[in-house]
Amino acid sequence: MSNKLAFIMLDGLRFDTAASQMGYMHHLIEMGKASRFKVKSELPSLSRPLYEVLLTGTPVYRNGITTNQTVRLSHEESIFHLTSKNGLKNATASYYWVSELYNTAPFNKMTDRVQLETDKPIQNGMFYWEDHYPDSHLFSDAHFLLNRYTPDFLYVHSMNIDDDGHKFTADSKEYRNRAIAADIVLASVLPKWMEAGYQIIVTADHGMNDDGQHGGTTTADRDVPLFIVSDKLEPGMYEEEIPQLQIAPLACELLGIQPSEAMQKLSLPNLKKVSS
Image 1: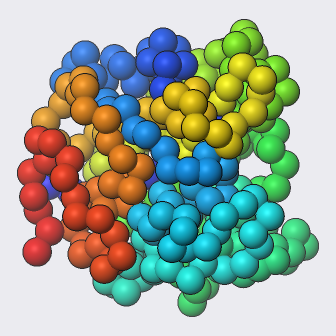
Image 2: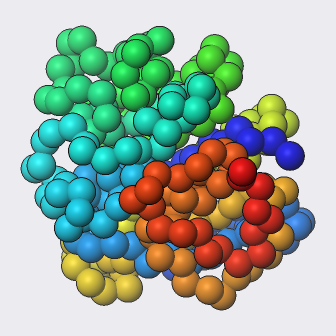
């Protein structure tokens, strides 16, 4: 069993859109290669707070990242911290808020776009700041990092679905077509990454409503997909609704490392326990 993990976060992708538009990911399920769950996001269903939730497994009231305007380094132990502490390599191709949470805040566009072989929690990072930065370019950045550094943990953060949701609303051909486009990008890169021994997580931070917004408590705001490609989990379509706080300890389990003390105990169904 491999312990390498590529964690892909498709910002703003709601569950029903993923279920209806992502043909390649569902092909993997039909062929017995992947599993799918529904995740209920934490509140508030906003981006920066949920980046912290996904990467530290801590709720907003504890971690203090309460708004998109909370610009400071995290006070929690993230998956980047944990992989470094365990002697593993990590890398990310992400929106610049991820750098502001774990490497340096505020982000300096002139100096912080490319951060390679650092002694910070994110060892190797390539960051962007335009929400329309093409997913095709982002996954090329990620593939470069994978080939150059063979990280044990690769985090990839896409913004195009969220961007089109805000521009056109979730009830639009543009939003649905952008989800299809992301699925096509995944179909291009995931076979290579799986062949290289990577397990895969694909999920989202929050959904999108028909006003082109998120932040509230509705299913459109909160229900997001979780796809997992790993031989540590029985494939299939699962009906269980997974709390978003379970994703960080799940990532630790797939990486074969101990979660932080602040993370929930993992209770995902049909997972083969592997960590010591």
